[in-house]
Length: 141
Ligand code: DQA
Image (cartoon, rainbow, N blue to C red):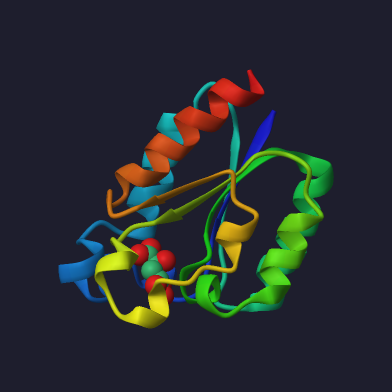
């Protein structure tokens, strides 16, 4: 079964943006890491800066994907629309943050997505995606 790996706003700048917080590896590096971690499962690895695009991809996951691994980025803290879309998806959802959001500004401590997520990983860097994918692989068999 296919696993969707969804990435929200500004993660296209991974490796260039605030490397002290998000590290120096790029989104392409992350995709390669995720593909290796998910094998033999196939992944659909996507990134958008647009909230509606993320919502549309979650809708597509209803027919296509057995599980979703999502780093909603800033939408984590703002988006009821992403939460509602995830509530319309039946499979496992794991929320991943590269940084340890609870050590950062107070506005990063609340997550709408956590009200739906079956697991939440923060602060493990890109390895958080690896842990999430290994976990969902055991769930979907
Ligand atoms: C992030 C944390 C968010 O607070 C932030 O807006 C991001 C990335 C992370 O991966 O650590 O863009 O989701």
